[in-house]
Image (cartoon, rainbow, N blue to C red):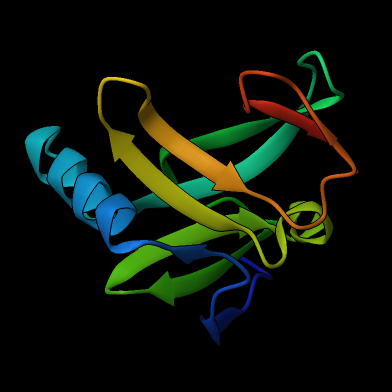
Length: 117
């Protein structure tokens, strides 16, 4: 039995573009109903931490959130690094992909995929 709790207020937010792209990907990839969007961090990258984003099953240390109709799983330990972050999606000539606007980052790399806090 999981000890994780479910709350309604997500520590992260998404732009409309990011929500639309995530919902499109979930449908296109036929993501199973017991999976949700996992957001997290891992050690590595040129600035210290790299972002994790993808669809996954719930794990024991996860908390469950909801934003814009999208279910989110996040490890409790990662919330200190991700609280207040806004995730955007760009699909243009100058940039394509998810963009992480992290107010907790004290340093980021040039590509925007890693940070230090």
